Image (cartoon, rainbow, N blue to C red; front, side):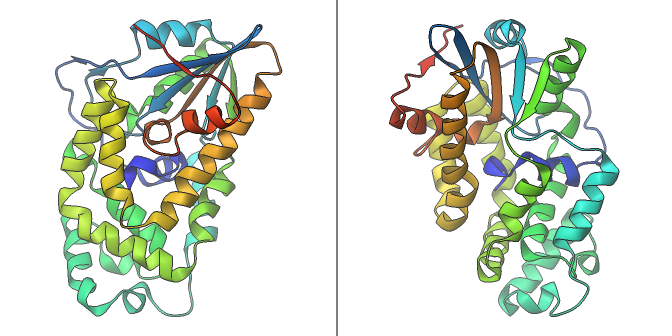
Amino acid sequence: MLKFLPRVLTAFVLLAAPPALAQETKDADPALWVVKDADTTIYLFGTVHVLKPGLSWFDEGVKAAFDKSDELVLEMIEPDAATMQGLILKTAVNPTGPTLTEKLPADKRDAFGKALADVGVPAAALDRVDPWFAAVTLTMAGLPKLGYDPASGAERALATAAKTANKQLIGLETVEEQLGFFDTLPEPLQVKFLISTIDDYAKMGDQLDKMVASWSAGDPEALGRVMNEELADTPEIAKVLLADRNARWAEWIGKRLAQPGTVFVAVGAGHLAGAGSVQEQLAKHKLAVTRVAY
């Protein structure tokens, strides 16, 4: 599910994650698109929220487009740790009612416990959280063990560069909105999401490695195929986290074209690949999107 998790959840779960060891630098050339009119240029760049150290992607065409831009637009503006923790406690914790163990089918409890033990999270620590947050925690807590470093995520690098260059920083969504995508899901669907995460836990590293390899190679078609494998289990969640958001973002881009300037929009790479992508949604608005060659 990492392929389309909102940025807010990676920002929270990885706050205290240990940094990964440095690795040899490898060149990456992620895909970049542009949509424009007479006085407005909007670049579209797909990010990966967490990466292994050593990927050299913020250069060449990506850096050139960023440098030309007056504004950086991200999924959301990352809040400070205290604010994030307070929102999670308010949104995801349930001190009364059935426990998470009671909500989970009996035949999945053992596998869930083993997966949590593998990432060093006590099962008791999650017994009072919503199923969606347990799924996110299981996904994210395992990433450092796989060599992924939260400090290497594309959004953090872009946001830091934007602040250094005094560029305007804009969020397409708020933290509360991103948490709400999950928290408003019906509980049976949240449990289904958790079960899918448990079932896919053992192959999470392979799936993410494939996604990052496709992203690094600038191959959105391959990235879309990897995503489709995962979305098959929970199409209802894919609608909330991908299709509906892509449609809203395309509408935002269309409206932004009415104002002059150059804008760099950076959202999760899954939103720019596969069926229902932002590019497909823009085509419905009669807006042409062009791949930037570099």
